[in-house]
Image 1: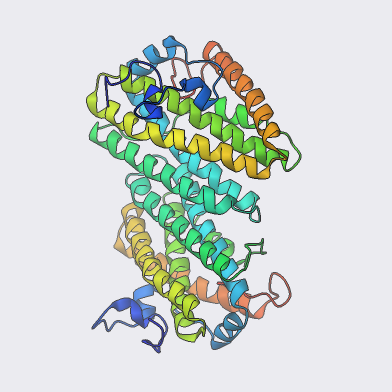
Image 2: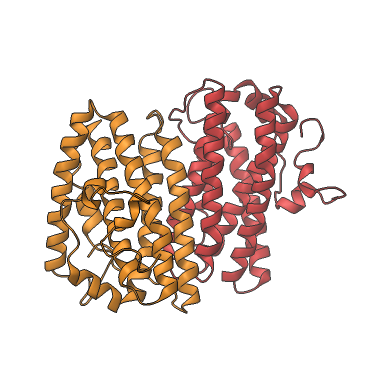
Length: 222
Length: 222
């Protein structure tokens, strides 16, 4: 997959796909080139963070299964995604093991928690917004993984990111579709998605210029 | 699988297997016949509780992945079990949907939480004991599912339990083996497993004779 694409996330749309990545993924701002430079310079740290991100994605879904046991269709849609996130977690672990890099605790980027905190407090808005936030996190991961596919020198690591990109894009779509089942109408989904996407871009800009979790740290969402 | 076995969990040992289930599964007391009578009389409630138990099993593993990010081999062994628990959760959900029974919140039995509370507080004893408690919960589920395979009239429900029995037994063994990786020696595992198994039997007897979570409630571990 490496070298096939020169533009971030362009590979998502399949042969003949022409939509702009930012439209498909609902992101309002592209990742700054400085992040790619930092990430490729600290590849092991970003890989360890990716393992934690995959684990966190599974954990967030499992907590939603507990929070909304009676929401129609939620468990049947989200549980398979949680399984896939765990599969990715294992895949990243195996890749780290091949590189001789043990998994270690990392201070997470504040991004995901801060984004999810923007959900409206009252139901069903809270569920709709939570799903849209998760959609945006998947979108950002997807965009950045595609950037890494193109930028990373290590062929195996680039291949790993390449394998994960398509799943992240698929999860993005699933989350948006599922949010629609709990929203009043399509207009609510569009309005909230646009608002949360603006917030996501602002958060990322703040995180990028603000103090990192630890000095010199680089994260999937730093 | 229904009707092939007349003794609880005897089907676990495969053709020609002769070990007693209680020895293989490390349980010190068999389930009382009264539980089987109650469970078959409230099949939907027990199925809903089973869905929640599978979800809870996945959730407990995911929390261990966060609590012990650096424990060698823990994540690689447990993450696939979490995926399997989620797959079972989905399978039970699909079965409930076919029966026209929606998933609903249930007050859980106090059993699992009370058993896990018996773990020693200091590491690595806490991890060893937690894994052994999870092994015993799988063992009890396995024993009871086999009892239901034999006792339940509904063929599809009996088949569902039959499909899950072997996984529960396999998980039991995996947990005990993994505990051995963090224990000082095999003697520690044997001693703690025996002690926790006695505690498990006492807890279950207390739960069975004490007040249920809600009047008339029956649970996988009530």
